[in-house]
Image (cartoon, rainbow, N blue to C red; front, side, top):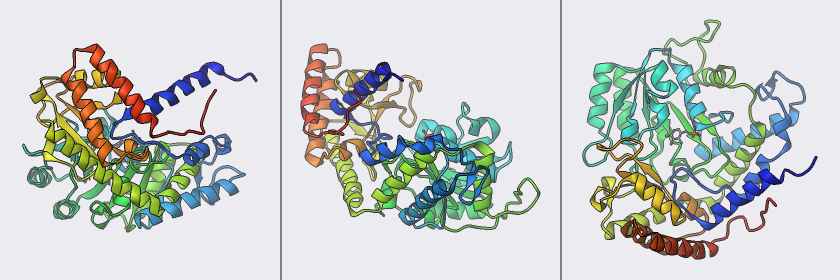
Length: 427
Ligand SMILES: *Cc1c(COP(=O)(O)O)cnc(C)c1O
């Protein structure tokens, strides 16, 4: 077969876009070359429905070793007793948890999407908001989780599950308090750590496993692995919520979750991606990753300081993790305009609603910035100061295409000092 030059030239273009730009999307990162290599491998050819030693297809002996390796490494990463590495994405991991612990129409409590929550935490546009009854808590005027509201809603609504975790929240979580509330109303606590997982893995943030029954995550954000999802338990438990398997047997939570991933919500697992997850988990266990995680926190704080100094309003006043949410209203522009203009300068961010936003989710008053990707490229605190200055120049020249164009040149020069996959080419 001839080389598909059209597809590979587009891949080369995307590689160059990634090399030349400043990537500040908080949910993105650059997986290592070994993680990329593992993804493009032969298990993509293999059907392996089921779990290690319990497959519905022959020829799974090597696949079993790979999946077991991924599971064992992940258990070490989070000091947990059980893990499922098959979810295709963070959304699939959450879908499986819903299926395992709730019946259609059951109530659950999650952080409102407009306050930093995720689509799968009960957005009306998502399965979680369509099949189940979603109730939401928010943040206070200061931008901190409104635990009082969470408690009051838990007591009046008696949800079956309480979800903590967010996509645009820069502070740590009080898991202990949420568990106490959940225990008082008989709810299960799910911690969705899709964003800060890499920092939690290295003990730089509170440990959700101490208090939350179930923990889900993506593997491609701060964990810096392939695009995918995971589900974990530190303590397996007999299901005491009266949820039964299809034959009416009471199962342990790990059995229910396994069944909810396959056959509940997925078919064949992506074993080439699971191989790449195993590589990423091995990297996370290294001392190098500890340095990386600490640098993320140092960079986020340096970025927050540099922007605050330039008059930017950071929701909640700062950050404990890898990201920050900026209210642009005092700068007289919308999130949409900021995102589009920064894009022209080679600085990639995403517009984001701020709490109590008066603009539509399509326009928004804010932008979300995260540092995991630029930290992977080797940038440090002083580079955050440079980036803040470049952002500020664009924002102050929002209707001046020449000024924006010259920032783009500066961005390219800056990023050429932090090589990305120097050995890689697709052409
Ligand atoms: C990113 C994210 C997810 C979903 O991950 P996908 O892999 O995009 O499906 C779920 N929950 C939270 C809190 C997230 O930030």
